[in-house]
Amino acid sequence: MNAEYLKLALLLCGIGHIVLSIASMIIPKALQWKKELNKLPVLLKQLFWTYAAYILVINFSFGIISIYGTEELMNHSFLAKSITLFISIYWAARVLIQFFYFDTTNAPKGFLYKAGEVMLILLFVLFTAVYFVTFLYNHS
Image (tube, rainbow, N blue to C red; front, top):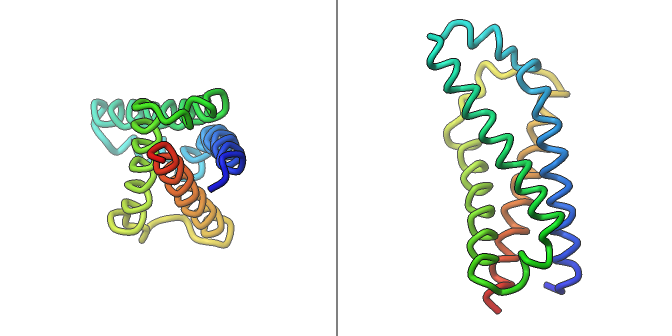
């Protein structure tokens, strides 16, 4: 892939990570986390919110790194290879979890929710592909 297109793809993925992080703030309300989590013991509820916060910070950080560190993500260094491979594996795992682990039986119904799910999966696949292509670019 042309280096300039790859830089643009990384920048767009960075923006995508930031948008994803901001949009993630509506998920707790849309899926009624507060109501559902009240059924759990306090420690489990706290763990859940802690893990959710970690994921949010990681996704946001991927965005910041991709926007402000585009050149560094493409400089063929060990760190560039490591980070791009890590981000690619992170999102590939998320796609696999979506299809092979999540039980969506009780997920909200309707066009809006289904469209949102499809858009998220496409975004996760895009992230997987762009960062993996960047990893391969760093090996050239």
